[in-house]
Amino acid sequence: MANASSGGSRRGIDPDYVLWAVMALPGLWMIACGFLNIKIPYVGWSGILACWFIVLAMLVTPAMMLYRPLIWLKPKRRYFGVAGFAYTLLHLAFWAYNLKPGGITASFTRPKILVGWIAFFILVPLALTSFDRAVRALGPRCKTLQRWVYPAAFFTLLHWLTTADSLRIVILSSLPVIVLSAWRLIRWQSRTRAA
Image (cartoon, rainbow, N blue to C red; front, side):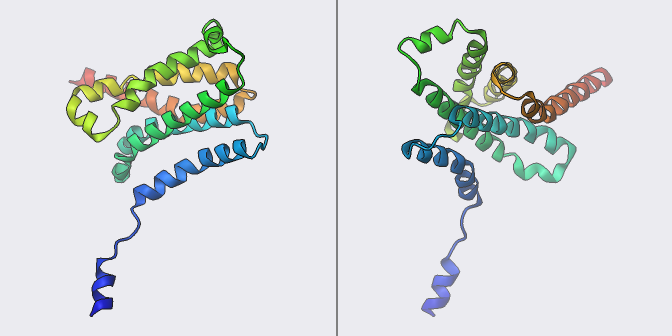
């Protein structure tokens, strides 16, 4: 009887926790490498991961519109966005670590870094309002605020284009969200005209 009851009360691992763990692994690995003085391109890799997760977050809605069974991805959209911001913070920390005194202030005069700062400052309120309590408090205004992800993505792309060693990874990573965002815009315009 004891075995039956204990077996029946067991719960499987929450898939959300597994997703968070998987998303955190690259960052934890980079931090561990830093403590162990292992030389890897910390700034580049953390920046690429930040961009990839932001792209993933932006792909969820058009993917659901194209293929309805992907509706299960909807709550994961915020997870991808928060992960993208977390890697943005890590990217910023790795970049700032080796700066000379006054380096951060001087970076605002460099266009390729300035656009990165603009993207970061847009992402801050988006990240701070990505939690359930903030979403409930904002109500419909949350959706309006979250649309700022598009200018944030635009400035992120500019920053990536002007700082990347290879444009191929930038183009390949950005192309899906550019194409699907254009499709959404065309679809919205056609529906507006039809109405």
